[in-house]
Image (cartoon, rainbow, N blue to C red; front, side, top):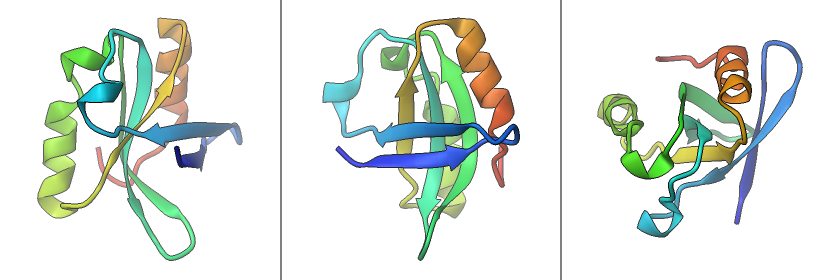
Length: 97
């Protein structure tokens, strides 16, 4: 499982894993990003959070970003509390969103 790290505006580092199909869809809270791999780094295109990954509330953002960046994957980070997910999503600054 490949991990991708993003630095937040605060300087904190957040580690994400790629959503690899329906086997990863569980009723868990996550922070998620849509990003595009570059030559040396990943470009953050969208960010959000949800209480339930399996509900696919991220699907609209993913579709919007993929209109301009067709291969951009969804990456997620498991979290335990909503307040932590909200803080992480606020700390990450996407190019689009």
